Image (tube, rainbow, N blue to C red; front, side):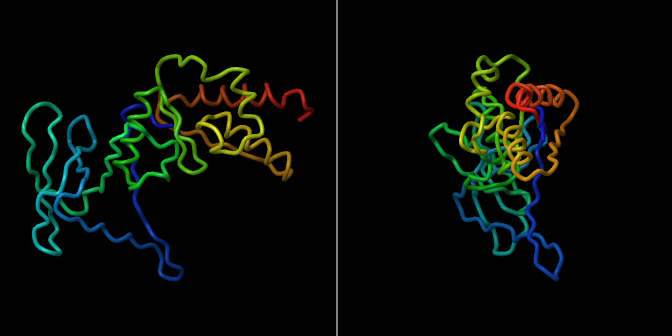
Length: 214
């Protein structure tokens, strides 16, 4: 899937129990001082904060001290328990190439990881075998081309940095090995980069397997 800059990736955690249908996963329990994200009605979908008060056990609301984006003082917000997401502060400035390796996997932490990666021109991120892409709206030197094509040839997903070349190579090797048709779904909002990504995948296939009689 492709998500444009500023787009919101919504994830709802669900558990499947055979014979009992789908049920919502239990809400996380918080203690005073826990790092969290809370929804925001402004440009940012979530704001960082920490639990100021858990109120009564079983209460539907929590008091969250929301960090100021500038030099102003923090503010106390009363937020529904179900709207609060756990947050982890790595403090090392690093990001995760695969969202499944995040300490807390929820919509807020996924968006934070994607935002930091986009800011450092790392526009591709895995969620397991799914590749998420964010349109950089500029050229990134050295990201594509024959040299990069050669690096990804025969490599498993995750062996190198996230890239459409890895997805294309994996699909072709599965086609050759299993003799079964392969498909790639490229989806996203208008302007997210679907057409360009399709061109990148086709260019890889042409460069690497076009002359193999496939």
